[in-house]
Each structure stands twice: as structure tokens, then as C-alpha cells.
Image (cartoon, rainbow, N blue to C red; front, side):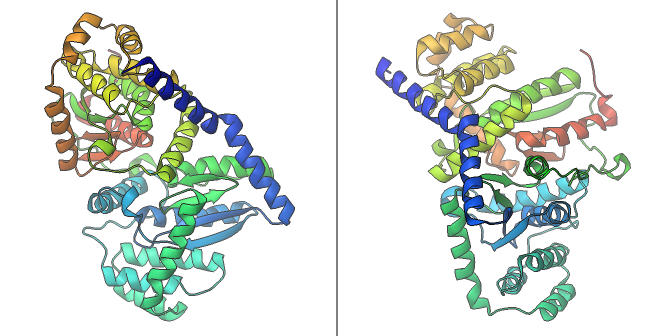
Length: 444
């Protein structure tokens, strides 16, 4: 790795930082607002809904509340599943989406019927045929929620009744309509359903809707109750984690994942306050495990991660992509650091270097700096770089992630609870807090 390669990586990171930074976000919002004013148009939220996506059903319920609280217009767009280039594990995605929606509905005041198994394909097509019929967007949203409730409850009689009441187009009209709407979503800058576009930005899934709510409240001067509220403690599920006093928690991580970096502070906090045995499981980046990361997905993730970092008060944006030798170096050192009980220290130092300091992990100058900042010996780290055993270790970690039913990071497993995403850490903590055998938080 030459000095020129390092410079090229850092310059690319500087360009990304300029795009993701607050001035860039403000410019996008300003352009969108100027276009709206020039056209004399009302403020409008565009909701992209997939009948077969449980996350879309959850978001649709909150969008109904949003329309009652804020004077905005609605654009309703029926789309299909994500394209193959942004959906590396479609079967796992479908199963996890159902599990995740059930977990979200246990913690927040949204509905998701308890169910087992996947949706009936014909039922999905019939529901989509209802929603491709032309009608006002607010009516589409209301009907989408009704259909979603029937679909996810496997209530065939109610689905038939809704079809009869609202009417439907022919099944042949569904695929081209869904494809056209999905292509429009990709053109506008996003790649999956359960997503709202507003004013040059995107809000995907229920966990991002508070951002949209805060923005609308600020722009419109509306003081309304929160669109989402936590369920009462008594309504939440028992915490079936482990019989032992200490709870094993698996944490899958990638040095190339911005969300993995954003999860580290929260993971360290949980490890400090709860009696858990944290098992750190680093893996190769998705693109080195057969996946793809097209520009539309990469940019959407970057913008969302920047917004999350600002919410959490975590430095982010001065990036130097570790893909390739830099990532290999990090994995080799991480394996030894974890064995020595310093894994979390090294992950935090290296990830900070990658995502906030534009340090090139392929450069020994930068690599040594993050190693020594973590309290590790550079001499020992150099020895680790010559040990190829990290490759089999990282692959075994990825294989175990697949067994857990997931493919992306950061992911977590504690007892029967398996989840994906740094924004699910509060739900994991809720399980730990209510786990009687664990004895509650500790000050160790």
C-alpha cells in the first residue's frame, strides 16, 4: 500500500464527508423547499408501501397518525420487494422482518398480529390488486392498514370482505404497477419500502419516524403528542434469556459497517451496566461475502448513519473506507485483541479512526495509532498480522450469523432474542433489564 493509495482513500472520504455533512443536508432541504414554493405546492410526504412487508404495515399505522396531527398532503406508492442488488438474503429478510415487526409491536403502540409462517402468496396478490386501483391517497392508506391487519392475521374472510367492499383491478396489472413505483423510488434515491420521502430526505422504518415528526413540528409550528409511544411495562413480553446469572450476548460486527461503529458506545454501556458475557463476532464486509452495495444503497445508508450519529453525539463523516487490506488488518488484530480481553477497546479505536478520523487501516502509520490508543502493543499487533487464522475465524462468525437467521450487522443474540440494527439496542436492554435471573444492572 503506497502513500498515494492512502491519499486517494482519504480524499474520497473527504468528498463523502462534504456530501453527508450538515451543509450538504441543509442544501438538499433548501433545494426541495425552494422547488415546493416555486410550484405553489403543499408540503407532502411520500410513503412507499409493500403489501408483503411487515415494516410497511407498521409505518402505515403511524402515517395515519401523522396525517391527523400535521397539515401535509400524502403521496401513496405501492411497491414490490427490493431488487436483488440491494437484497442479498431475501429469504432471511422475509423471516426476520416478521420477527422484528412482532418485537417492535411489543415495545411500541403499533399493531402486529402474532403469527407463524409466511404470508399466502395469493392473498398478497389479491391485496395488492385492491391497492393498485386508483383512489385518493388517504383512502389508499386507510385501506392498506385494513388489508395489512387481515393479511398478517391470516384472516381470509376479512380479506375477501375488504376486496368486495373496495374493489380490485386484475391481477395482471399488479406487477407492472409495482415495478414502475419501485423504479421511481430508486430514481429518487432510496431502495426499499416502509420508507417516507419528505423535503429531500428519507425516513425508513418506524425507528426513523421521530426525525420526520420533529422536522414537521419545527417547520409547521405544531405541538402534537408523539406519534409513537412505548407500551406499558406489564404489556411487554417476559425476558427469556438464560438460566445463568450472567447472560451471554453475541455481537456481530463489521469494520466497514457505519451502524456497527454507531453501536459500539451502546454495547460498551450495556456491558458496563449489566451482567452479560459479551461475545464479539467480527465478520467480513457484505461485499466480501457475495453481496452488493450499489450507489443508491451506499448513499442512503451514509446519510442515515450521519443523522443517527448526530442524534447519539458520535463523531462521524471523516471516512477512509477500510475495504481490502485495511479491513483484513483490523480483523487479524481484533482476533488477538478479543482473546486478550481487549476486543471492545480495539473495535472502538479502529472504528473511530475509520469513520471519524479518516485513518487508513492499510497504512501502518494509522494502524499503529489506533492499536496503541486501544492500549495494545504494536509489536504484538504486527505479529497478529502474520497469522492467517483470522480468515477461518471470521467465516465461522458469519456462518453463525446465518444460523441465527441474519446476514447484516450489527446483530445481537441474547437467549431467544435475535435482532439486527444499532437502533434495536434499547429493545435488547429492555430484555436484559427485565431478566430476573440476571439480577438487574450492575455497577461493576
